[in-house]
Image (cartoon, rainbow over all chains, first blue to last red; front, side, top):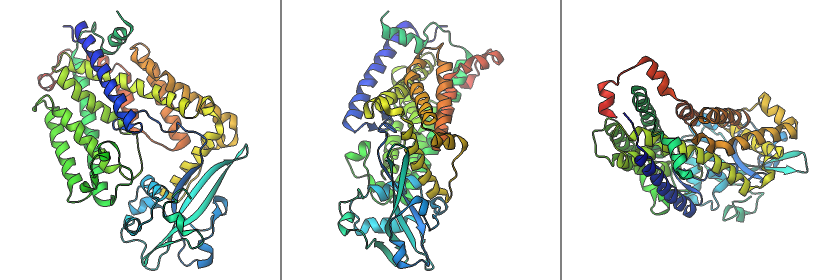
Amino acid sequence: MISMEITATKKGIRVIGIILLVYALLVATHEGEFWPFSIYPMFSQAGNPWTRAMVLDVTDQSEELIWEKHSLENRQWPPVPVREYGVDQIDFSNFISKTEHWTEPRKAALNNMFGSYPKDGMKWMTVKVHGQLIGKDSVAVEIVPWLLVTEDGVFENPNLDSSLYIGGGGQ
Amino acid sequence: MTWYHKIGAELFEPDREQTPGELIFFKLFEAFIVFYTIKFVWEWGIYSQIRNMEVVLPLGIANYFDVSLFFDYNLALINAALITLLIVIAFFRMGPRWLYMVIILLFHLQYVIRFSQGEIPHSQNLIGMSVFCLAIGAIFFPGQKQMPRFVMGSIIFFIGLGYTSAFFAKLIGTGINWYDGRHLWLWISEKSIDILSREGVYNPNLLQQMALGSTAVASIILLIGWLTEFIGFTMWWKKLRPYTVTLLIGMHFGITLTMNIRFDAFVIQLILVGYPWYRVIDTYLKTTPEMIKRWA
């Protein structure tokens, strides 16, 4: 018994060709992504500075110090492991780094992300972390305190220009 | 015979007779796809229901209507339940031929609901692509004679294409210096922040330490990975397939070790499609069980 004849094979290639055409049209018109079709652009742009986010526990720390920018090597506050609170790190990081307009609903969404935390006087600082190549042989990583989350609300960094929270997501 | 018909002959192997092993393997493979589809749609549905509040990045059909509607009223969970029901019916060939096409549309919808928060993951693409190939196979190549060959052949085609296109995306996106080891330093440091944030602690492993300690080592790691991606398309040729797939699996282990990115479903699927498992089954089984014939 022959399973797939020559004619069916030719039809198979024709069908793949048509799928390829649809594939190309969809990814071309949707910035390379129309799931499950993709041009697989991850890691295609190398060497660019990056921005991620994390949460530092600044409970009981001096109000003056918690808003200061500092390098990763000089980090003083312990990170809050977001997975323990059911939060997807990649989602969280994108949420912080890609949001350009920090409207009240956006801040509320950040507060909602961690459920009932922080509570009992806890103070959690969401920080942006920037990395870039410096010179020929090193990577510099800087921590920028971004939004303080407490039971009482979400607060912007007073040391930063407030315009950064409205359309200045690049910081 | 034109060059593309030759490739077709390598993918669909019209000269090879169908054996019990092929049919059984195909059904096992389809069960694997069904399992992961159900796993993903429920994981995405539950996450969307609990966490998603606003659409940060609309993908696919989310560009054309507001999918935040699905964050409430359990709609993402209802969609997951619907996909589960339909894919089980499709697996047992109890529904119409176009059922898998409906499933891939709902699966796409579930993806854009879940991943509307800024992240664009690719680790589930192969499962989605396989459901899509099942949809095309069920419509244009129905029946046990043609469907297994078309589905497996087309999946192999798109996997090979995906890796090779990723090579060119890097060449176009960065240039020939893509493999500069310092680029790996940047990615390792970026991923280290994700792990530090997720777990509260991060310690580089041996390979990462070696890469961070020497630009040359880091460059070699990137170059090997990049060239392996380039030869992805060689898996279209059945004799080369096991070797190409072995290299690709090795590359994925390399990515896991250097950048802490795991592609479980991807790697399992590569293991399944890369080697002629039907031959192993054929050494033990000489006839096709009735139920497999019914569900083929």
